[in-house]
Length: 449
Image (tube, rainbow, N blue to C red; front, side, top):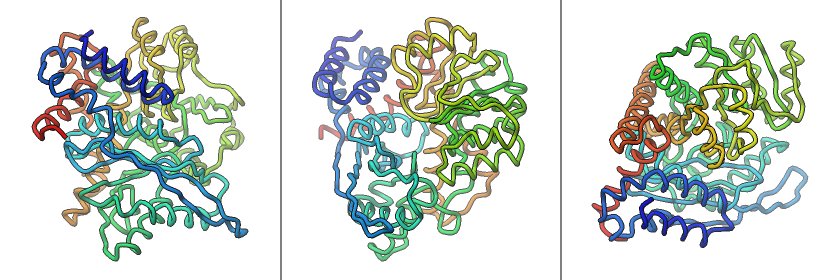
């Protein structure tokens, strides 16, 4: 490996040893882009890699709100504006009790390269709070969102930083956040947030976009292997908007999701989660913040396996981790290899440990990296920004077609980058290189700061 790359990775491991998620994603990206650094010695002279691991801006703030009984609660909010070299900061807000500085940093770093891959002029950011909407009333969530936005609104805007939804932040939360932003600013700057409702500037198919895009990316992987998506059985972790989008698009293309998991266990539906009734049930389950997957099994007559995961199931063709980070470690990777499943499509951010990735690659599993496969969500968010700025409203078919083209382009760029550096069919390295090159060029051209 390039000595400069090794030194920067060592620097990050030492300085941020208490931020394991951030260290893991930096190591994964920088190991992949070592051939690029070999070809560009000017990057070392400009100390580009060390500059790139430090966020341009990272801040935390107090969020105080009152519950329905009049009790006062205090949470912590974060925003990491990681890199704005190619456009305004762009990245989601996550409301979950495990949100901390390490999490928003790793997600912001990852988002920078993912956004670069979309071809849209958007930089990387991430944020959120350790507030969990589960079990809260609509009024409690509204009051929290209003307090959160009151602390954040001075630092965002259509040409500064454009947050979106993520885990725990759906259309309801975005609506409350935007309402408070509009109240505070006194202007209808609906381009400040994406994932909005259709009544005030949202884009059609935005809730499904990440899942749709992952399936489009999967199609390209299958084509490379002279294979087809028709008839494929898919195991998906999670049952939020991303997984729901995978289920919908897979069904449209002749495949079916037969395994679905949540924090309390998983279900196995041999018939597939593919009918309108089943898809609506999943949507309603997600909207209610329920963690009761057993209710799906009871309603549709299939098996529910409490406190278990499906990694190792043999009666599937494709695994798609789509819930959260660090879902699959070495033990799970061994089960996947033993099951003989050929395709592993990362959809959530960093769902697989670096050790597990290497094990899967060594045993011939084809891996699609999350920063490429899940870029459809932010890609459609960028399309929403375009519609807002131009006062346009595209049809669902128009947005879906643009998304399809975008995902094929991301796949093609990743494949081309890997082949250009003699790395063969390594989509992980290819995505890292393709995403890195655009950001690196923009930073070099803008000088040292």
